[in-house]
Image (spheres, protein in one colour):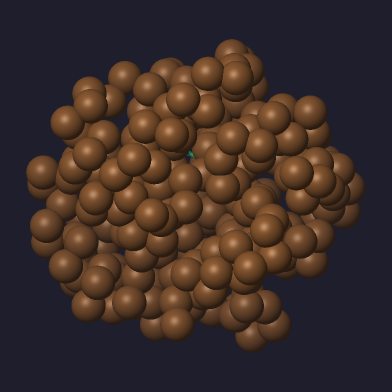
Amino acid sequence: MNRIDAAFERLRSEGKKAFVAYVAAGDPSFEASLEVVKALADAGADVIELGLPFSDPLADGIVNQMAADRALKAGMNTPRSLELIREFRKTHETPIVLFTYLNPIFTYGFEKFHADAAAAGADGILLLDLPPDEAKLNADLAKGEGLKHIRLIAPTTPDERVQLLARSGDGFIYALSRTGVTGAHGVPSEGIGAQVAKIKAHTNIPVCVGFGITRPDQAEMVAKTSDGVIVGSAIVKQIELNPDRAAQAVREFVTPLIEATKSV
Ligand SMILES: O=P(O)(O)OC[C@@H](O)[C@@H](O)c1c[nH]c2ccccc12
């Protein structure tokens, strides 16, 4: 069974909510990033969203932009990102969603990318700038390789597209807590519960919420009204601030966030 499905099945049977952690592959270096990803898994993250660094990350705020930049400067690219997953898989089974934009995988080659990502040990893909209407090829390739195709739904997504996205969703739905780019600005509001309910009217797969979650009290609030909490920039900021002890800093930072998510 796909590791993402297995993780959510386990969480459902335990009555627990998911903690999904995002970092950029190769930030601040290949070796340090591998330690960070392992630290996230060891701290209890249920799913790791691994960003394949891209030079023009249009949906990312400054913290994630700088992380992608650090990774690219350290020599990260698509083959090295897949290599990082392969290394991680030697010791860990935590599911990995490979997040990126269309350009890097267009350059790499769609077919080769899906096949190589699956062979490396990825479990899902999230292609930010690929709308569902244009996604047939990638969705079919993902399916053929046993990869979950994760869909994003924004607060501004019109109702008929919420339905389309929710029904074509696979693994879990990523619900954005607000509009704009990734980062700490703009905290999630209680209104997110209504958005999650709207999505759940069309699908039985889990709905996780991300964007702007930085503190345990926010994680707890979001966990109460959804199936999982996604945190990115706040974790990435720890890498930025502690490049020489990134894994340890990340582990210390996520532990209370995971506890808050699991307290619900
Ligand atoms: O950084 P935040 O606000 O905690 O949001 C999660 C986010 O970083 C991660 O899921 C992600 C990284 N880049 C993205 C681009 C679009 C959507 C989501 C993402």
